[in-house]
Length: 265
Image (cartoon, rainbow, N blue to C red; front, side, top):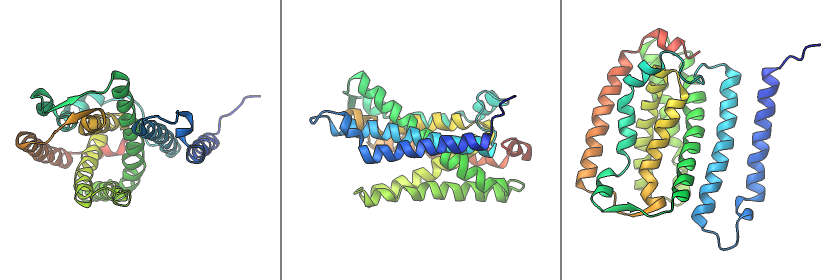
C-alpha cells in the first residue's frame, strides 16, 4: 500500500510545531541558556535570530500550501531578472557606511563570531519579513489585481503600507517618534522595491538577500562597532542613490508584462 503525502496536513503540522516552538521561546526564555552575567545584546540577538527563523518557517509553509511559485531558486528567468534588479542591490550595499568606515569616522570592533551572529540575525529577520510581507501579503493583494497596471500598483502600495505600518510598534517599545517615522518611510520604499524585484525574478530568496544586506549595513556599526555613520557626504550619497533607484524601479514597474506576474501563481 502506497503512502500518499497530504500537503495540507504536512503544512498544518509544520505550522503547529513552529507555533509551539515560539510559545516555548516566550515561556521558557532564551536567557535561561546563558549565564547571569551574559551580555544583554547577545541574548537579544540570539532570541531575535531564533524567533524570526521560526516565524519565517511558518510563512514559508503558508507559501508552499498556497502554491505560489516564488520558492524555486534559479528558475528562469532568474539571471535576467537579477540583471534588471541590480540597482536594488546598490541600495542595500549603500546602506553600509562605506565612507565613514573608510575615513575612520566609524569602525567595526566586535569579534568575528559576533559579526557572524548579527549577520545571521539580519538574514533571519529578512527571511521572516519577506516571506510574510512580500510572500503572503503582497502576493495575496496582487492575486486578483494582477491583470491591470493600476491593480498591480495598488497591490504594491497596500502591501508596502502594511509593512511600513507594522514598524509603528517600535514607538511603544520606546523608540523616538522621529526615528520611527523615518523607519516607516524607508520601510515603505524597501517594500515597494522588493515587490518589483519579486515580480521580475519570481524568487523570494533574492528579496531576502537584498533585505538582509540592507539591514546588516544599516545597523552593523550600532550592533558591532562604534562611531558616527552619518555626515553630509553619506547623507547626500544615500539621498542620490534612493532617488535614482526609485525612478529606475518605477520605470521597471511600468514595463512589467502580464506574463511576468502570472508566473508567480
